Length: 135
Image (cartoon, rainbow, N blue to C red):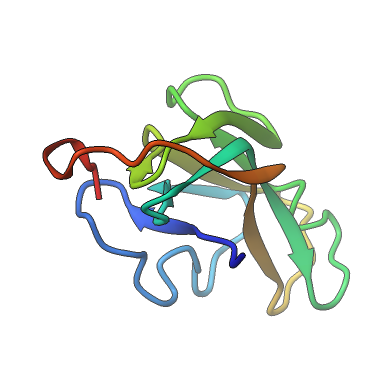
């Protein structure tokens, strides 16, 4: 079975545009935020115990890109990873805020990261009626 978790726009029912979570060139001692959702696009499988976190990709940076990015469900309490619980077929999580905080001592360069959403399992569930489908 294919992984059916997709990062979605926070307000529109569409997958994130390419580069949406990219920051471009940033300066030291700065911060920024982006908001999105995690969607289970399957119409028949429940994504169980969904988690989301930031992972480093590419060359090592000091501090790591994962350490400079935090996630929040309420926009106030930020952490390195979130437990989103179960996502029934055709639904999306509450909005998630990704916050970048670049310290004044950060290495310069083209550093990369990825936001990883994963489910412990996908199990067959009752599909939602079309009028209740969030996506």
